[in-house]
Image (cartoon, rainbow, N blue to C red; front, side, top):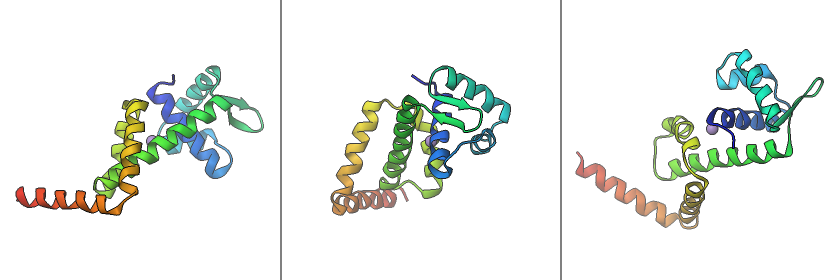
Length: 142
Ligand SMILES: [Mn+2]
């Protein structure tokens, strides 16, 4: 299992490859706001653990194992954003909050949150009911 930090890198590398077709050390450093030397170090570790291969001319290529995990990590991030949005968290807090919690939930919890998101998405009325609860609570707290 990848560590929290490895997860951040695999997730970001996966996103860069999806968006641009490649992931350079400098792009990864910029996206994660870390020094390029830290990226090089981590890339070596990820290569050793068989999440990616560093090829001289093609750059970083995710292995099937790295690609599979990258896909799941991006899904998890997007699902948690959706979840916080549905429960009414302020838009400007969503990304930061997801970055804070995503590594600390079991896949069991992620799957159950997935069910909950589906439950709300299947019927807009359920979202409206939740909003009503929130409005009532806000009034009580005033
Ligand atoms: Mn993330």
